[in-house]
Length: 206
Length: 135
Image 1 (cartoon, rainbow over the protein chains, first blue to last red):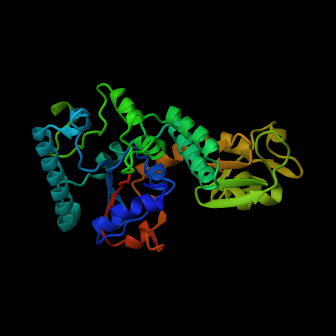
Image 2: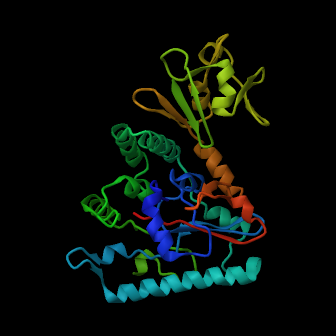
Image 3: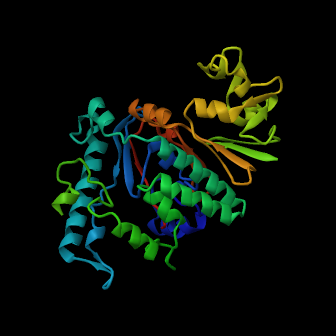
């Protein structure tokens, strides 16, 4: 989910994955699948059928436990996060082996209920974002910024749109003042929605 | 010149007039993927009729009000402030219908090597679609 191929390059090269890593410069997949953050995952079976609609990709709602002063997370929360990641990847492995017989796949009814519903404002935000990316590539950053600001108003839940377009640190990561201000404004709302899967801690459990 | 974008097309056209998005009849199909037929504004099997009595809002002899059709279909259309580029997007109803059908929407993107991959290329395998970002 990177507008800039060169920003994505070092991460992909360092990971050196055996699977394809595709660069979604205009956040098309986010638009098609109504996504809001990374990582999010979708499970698609061998017939092209969604068996787990977009969900938080194994992360837990850790950000509230980040101490900006020390720049670290509490140790016990880090352990919970590691456990959660293991739980999620083990579920994926179970599905890889067992397919439709995996207890982690949703039946059609449950899958439909887990599809995040898109509003008209969000659909407009996606169109606006893609126009913003076009003018950005044309070199008109001022117009792009104007359009990206509209996106934030229309789709405040989208961390993808926000972090792609907000100030970045030297690392390229959007963890500046604007980001933490928006995180602070979450209140009780989670940064990462809980995964509806046995063994995954929900935000309220943390 | 005005650039008309959809999620899978780009057309550079001369628009008609200054109000909203009117295109020359000949430009409509290439720019939008829809065609004007006697039944209305059509794509594949779907035709959206012009509301009775409101023909003037949507068509003239030479031009089609694509913006009005897009709004009629509850799809988002957005332009730059200068009006030199438009994005004709998909509507929420269509997105929701696509996802609740549980047929995973296809997409085609490139890797670092510039090679394109489509989701449908992986039919026959289980696919974990995972998103990440450098930011």
